[in-house]
Length: 289
View 1 (tube, rainbow, N blue to C red):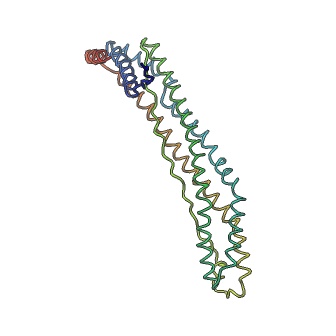
View 2: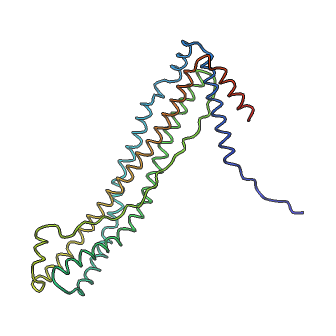
View 3: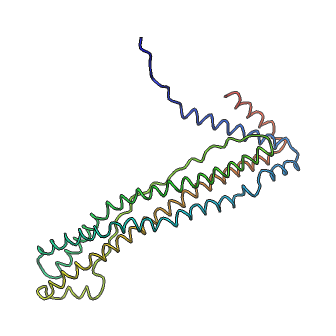
């Protein structure tokens, strides 16, 4: 008879529920202890728990510093990433444009419009994949920021739990910060007009037979500028995208800290008339466990 080798997977929902019950039990015990004290003792308890080390302004400053450390690295990183591809992109576009120019016919105005259309399509084709690759770098920044914010929040909770344990003898089991990482959409390639100056516009009035060679040298010479301009823009757009996402993550971490402090503060202000309610709630939890 063959013995089954099927492994029983842990029920993550059950684990989460058990952690939640443990956390609730700890906080209810703190609330009960506060409710059983007289007003003066209750205020002393609050002062013992809410020390300078767990003040919300201190935690906000730590989170802000962690965000700024990441932000300082984003623009140089994206600039270096896109700059590393500049020479190859420029070479491919210039070679392709040179081939295209040999086949173009028509007036200067016609060829200028054709150049605008061709360059827009070619730049998009070259830069869109690079923008998708940059999303990986953006994800790395978000991961590093999440890790730093999590360390700050966990250190705060360790200090807060230590204060509670020292003041009441009750160990707290706070739940971990559940991070909702913002989704980073791939930054699109945004192109501007090629002929922007009065000199460029004046060319449209000139006969092609007189300026064909000059026109071709001009548009080939613009390739480097077009590539540099759009790579710089992509680096800036990705930097801005990541910075907004970092601010969102920091706001989540701050909200988590604010919520926990506010909840504990309410518990530590409970009055003696509420003690019975805490005892009943604790009994219900013990019955479930």
